[in-house]
Length: 44
Image 1 (cartoon, rainbow, N blue to C red):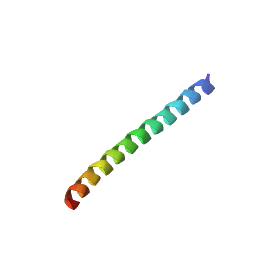
Image 2: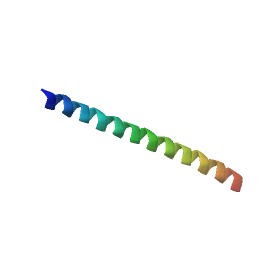
Image 3: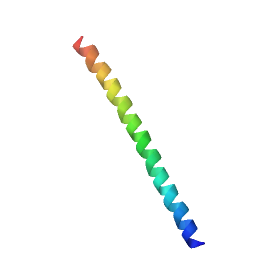
């Protein structure tokens, strides 16, 4: 019984990390895109 609880806890922890990583990556990419637009507008 304890093993199943630990496994599901591990899975939840990993899943949370994965989800957070995806969100963080998407956020950074969006920010980069916005910065590039601003830089391009400044250069033009």
